[in-house]
Length: 448
Image (cartoon, rainbow, N blue to C red; front, side):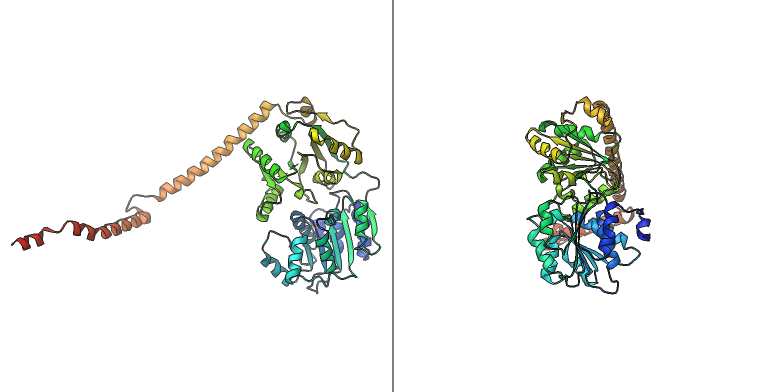
């Protein structure tokens, strides 16, 4: 309680109120709650409470689908255990195995990991799950998807059968619940919010028909909104992310890219800059749609319509977290209209019509209090020279330092070094000069 209060967490969310007594008593759980309503601490607090500090073995395992979510969950559990002393280790791909092996050998009591890297350690023998008492599958619907299922089953089989099993997600289809029952013993299904509303009411949601050739211009207009904070822009493909990020950087926006093909070090660097506000636009694939909690993320833009309502719920769940307000905007191209209609019908969002907009539409100005195109361009232009001037000033200082370092021969240490090099060159040339032009003395002797 003291550790949580230190970071401003004093009152539980509904999912925590319902799950904590059950989880602390050892009951298997299937927990469902809207994204951004505290699911991580619903299992993180019981883990911290149940770990035996004197035992160095891995006692709790949390399996998550993405690297970014892994690092975030590990950080949240570590914050909750700050005054207890529980050792938490994140095991993700894209990082060297060596430091992770060292951390495991030193006695990691709680391991948070992605399936692929967990399997690597299991096969190498650097990770033992024989002492695991609590197993958590976070974002369980994704973890039990067909792509992850074989890896997850292998990991589960490496844990004891008498463990406590908890599964959490914002969306829990019936097929997934049936599959989850294979891994848990008579689990209690906890649904924190009654009813079928899967999205947070504080998030304003808009669907706009946008021509594919005008989407980028509409996005730039939305990014010129005066009251926005950080923005997450979701693209369907990695190539789409790269095209969009290139255009935004050319326009002068502080934007960063996040997708699966980027090296892990770059991904972590981008996320760190985005969390600290050094970047205020994150263009990403669905790798960032699962569980990420970023303070100050005020807007989510679905540049491409999500493939289904589950993807939509997880994407827009990056904003409007922990009771805060948010804005979710979805672009709908002509070939995405049916998908958008299906999402709206299944989530009960059909009250408002899907209006067609362009970058010049007055509707965008009215809804988001946008400045005029000329004013927005002027603001970007005013910011660009300042940035360029700063770079030129920095370059000028560097050039000045270099000029100061290059002094005339004989002036200071640099001049002395140049003088020595010059003498060495002259010395090396002396024999060659004497051979070409013999001295006159020997010639006179020979003649005499």
